[in-house]
Length: 161
Image (tube, rainbow, N blue to C red; front, top):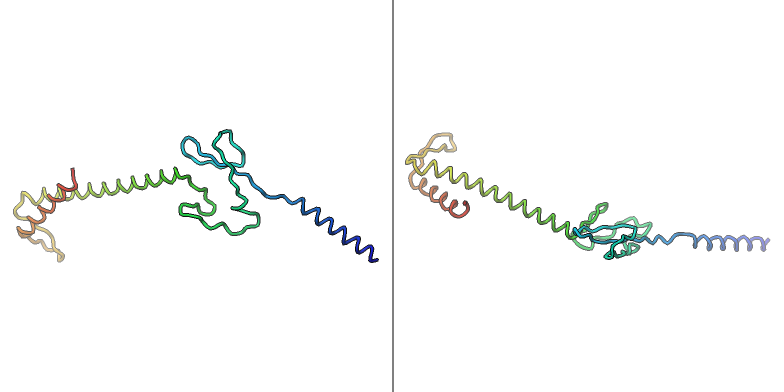
């Protein structure tokens, strides 16, 4: 009876040892390269170009890992996103800066138009009326009128073409 139990134990140990060699190593090959347009590509197949290099992803992701690795730096992609290349990040930054300059120029153009309109209304008129908080029409005194005219001329000289 002891011989049968020892034999079963030996068979079970051999089966477990043999099955351990059957599990895959889960080593993944990933290749990356940058094309002539500055776009970074990733693939599991080796491309035909010479500047491709292999990335070792075994350390980044191991099967059974439930948490994503902590981002190493800013600009890292969020989980599920494809990371952007440096060239793409630069293009997006330049596009954002260009849009901010356009918005600032549009605001400057709007203010130039308002100051020109003020000059057209106040310069030739000796009597300027405005509506106060109470809704009444009030005549602007000459000192205030001249101050607003000077303010508009300075703004136009400094900011408008």
